[in-house]
Length: 411
Length: 155
Image 1 (tube, each protein chain N blue to C red):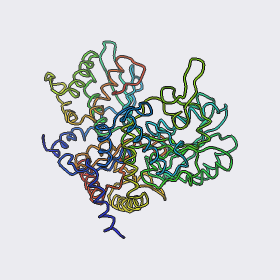
Image 2: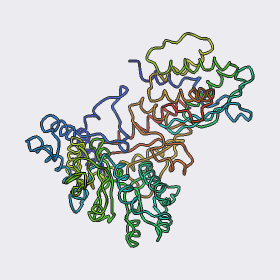
Image 3: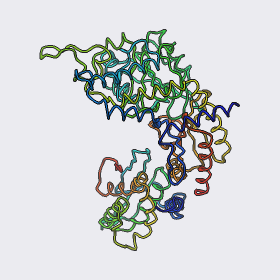
Image 4: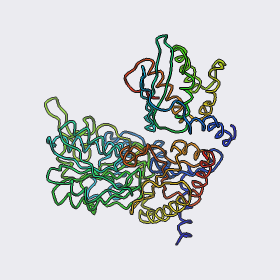
């Protein structure tokens, strides 16, 4: 194993993150909750601060210097994001408040006007609530039906059954790239290939995909890809809907307001071009500036490099967790990103979360906004440790030691 | 700031662990006169509370079902222990006192022998994220006595 090179690389990455330099409960912070929200490197924090101190004005409006600078910074981030996911054109990068808004936008603007009663939307049992509820809403509004592909004990989508569900009655497919609760990497390429052969559009929920995988939307071949800035070391309140230009072009606006119009009169309003048609109102300018800095940060390291490092560390974590008596791993997919759910004896995950916090170890506990996954396993929630590029083996060892403490207390 | 490890012991006191492992009054009450559901939307924990109130307005018996963390199960167990045998108005006073005590910065509550056992819950005061676990059963009690039809939540 080439651990030394990895370890030295990770040590330098870790020092880029100011929040990780603190103590919590008298111990160095072991932050294992990046799947909920990742910490931000100093370069992101500094980019936001510089923008707020020196460049802030509204975008796309004024002719003065600061407005020009703000617009350049905001639009510069759009270009960076385009490159990051290899979109064909910047017109395809719609900036939103996050994955949730991006998916709702597609449900309401792409699907709702076209859906007929009896049409089917196919998702999987693994989805985050953000890739379930928007489809339930649009089904209620149109009489369409939601079909759910099953998963197995390893936490993998049953691909054969998923492909069978995608039939002539299917209007749309929504699937997670990576499960937030279990870390499962879904076979999106196969699903997209199958759907495309039938002319069915596919949305990929990439919220947990972009932090771990090298994403190329053109190579993937999907029609929409949604993700959030704060899962990839950027600020909260930022996100992207990438969509094929011809599809976005044919969609009505999602919200009305300033910036999404070319001309307004009481007789007729002419909408702005892509992507501005979908960006009504003053956007989260400073957030998007920080988002661009996060893209720069990841690209300087390289997503493949990050994926390799996380894969090794996840293997180490799984090996160490399995040594603990009473541990039950939830989700053991053959292809898994660096996210691991587990249970310990019959200790409730919230009790585990509190005890671990006392050792300076931050994990996520509960249902992870994926209640159907918990229902499948017959549990109310899990403890989840998620690894990012700034974590190391010491964090994992601290997790394991803290779990030992929990067993002592609950003995 | 006190030692975190002592605080930890303060939260998971022996009485709390005992009630969470062996909850009292656990199960369904077939002849309940009042019931309520309690839901903690943060964690998805749920409990169902059953009360049988007699003609004199006294809580003759009580029980609960559901699953949750050690704090919420122990709190429900202690709550049913406490209010069984109490007149409804006294049970309501307990609800007010306990929720006040666990959610306020300063403990201004009166000393009351009947509520002394509930001091075991005081450890949660240091854990804002866990106070809701401790108050869920009490909100369900309030809701059951008020005959509210929507589930009690800690929100």
